[in-house]
Structure formats: C-alpha cells, structure tokens
Amino acid sequence: MALKQTSWTSQSLSELAGLFAELGRELLTEHSLDGTLELIGERAVKLVPAAQHAAISRGRNGRFETVGSTSELPPKVDQIQYDLGSGPCVDAAEDGETYRSSNLPADQRWPEFGRRAAAEHGVLSMLSVRLFLEDDDLVAALNLYSSATDAFDDDDQTLVTLLATHASMAMASARLHEQVDHLERALQSNRGIGVAMGVLMHRYKITQIEAFDLLRMASQHGHRKLVEVAIDVTETGTLELPPLPGRANVRSSG
Image 1: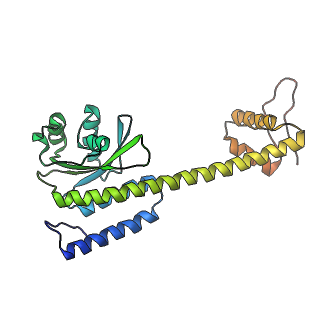
Image 2 (image 1 turned 90 degrees about the horizontal axis):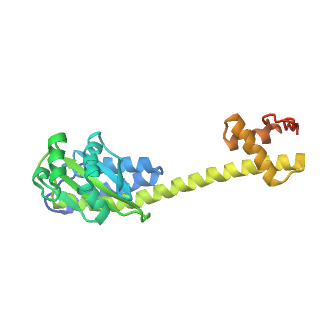
Image 3 (image 1 turned 90 degrees about the vertical axis):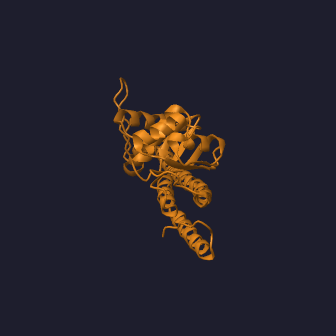
C-alpha cells in the first residue's frame, strides 16, 4: 500500500503503523546483508510514492559504492557524486544531515552534480538520509530519486527518517547474523583440520606443527583448500604428498 498524505490523520497514522509493522516482520526473516539492503530499497519506494528509485550509498575513508539499488539509475547518478566528492548522498553519509533537493539543476549546494544528474539521467529531485551503523569507519545514506521537481515534502522526509532508523537496526542485525555464520563455518573447518592433524600425529608420532605442515603441503600441491584435504584424511586415513628426494609419500591406511 502506498502512503501519501499532506497531513497526518488517524487513518494515515494507522496505515503507517501497519506498513512499518509489515516491514519489521520482513526484516526479521531476512538474515543476509544483501537481502536486507534490497528490501530496504524496495520498501522505500513503496512508502514514498514520489520516489521512482531508491538505493543506499555506503563508504569508508571517502570511497563509496551504491548497494540495494531498485534500478540501474541510482549507481549512475551516485557515481557522479563519488567522482566529485560531494552530493546529497555523500554529504548525508558523511555529516549526518538530511538533504532534500527539489530542483537539482538550480541547487547551489552541488552545482556540477545537479547539472549533470539532470542532464545525463533526468533526476531533478533527491532525498538523502544518513544510516547510523555500528562500524564507526563505515558510513551510509538511504537515497530517493525522482524525475519531477519538488517531488519530496516534509512528510516524505519524516517517513524516510523512520525507515532509515529501521534500516540501520536491520543492517546491524544482518551483519551480526553473517558474522555468526562465518564463525560457525570457520569453527567447523578448524575442527576438521584438528581431527586430521590428530590422525597424522597418532599415526606418525609427529608434532602438531609437523602435522599441519603436511596438510598445508598437500593442499598447495593439489591446489585444494586445506579443509578439503583434512576431510579426506579423516575419511580415508590417506594423505597424498608430492614426492621429494629421499622421502616416500605419506600414506596412512588407518
């Protein structure tokens, strides 16, 4: 349901609450960061009918990228800002202010960007709100784009500010889920490597360092991941190594 009101009424507030409740449920079930970014962009366009496109600008140390874009247009518009080092997306992300431009070609805050955004991509209005992230070095902004002048009003700005709050929390949650997932996979890999080392240590009466070196050599020689070699050792009791002068291959039959 699209929501557009020039003033808040009991009905519009009820609809708004329903939309954000729906968004909250969707964000709870989306655990990947990429999926969360895409969902935020889609819901931004749904919440603000004047927005024809939406995307998120994300950057670190002055270098930005566009993610969660609802179309091919935002990355092209944003790249102009990134090249110039200034524009509503970049400035919102870096200084935390909300930027709304109703006529980009005439906006003296970003004269070069505004002229090019309109001339090259037909974008005349933009609304950018900062996303607050847990990573102090990472900055981001939620951005809306329109080919109409005076596209966004005060109510739109309020909606996008509320959405940005939800988006910040959702991105932090998605990032945490991904970190936990990566940690679990790493622990599983480490356990597999540890078991394989134990097999080699017991069989050949060698140290932990020597057992790990054997796994590493087999990994490099076979152009395989270390964990794959470890799984083979635990399942087959065999470790294939490249032949070296004066040493036979290490093979364990269990």
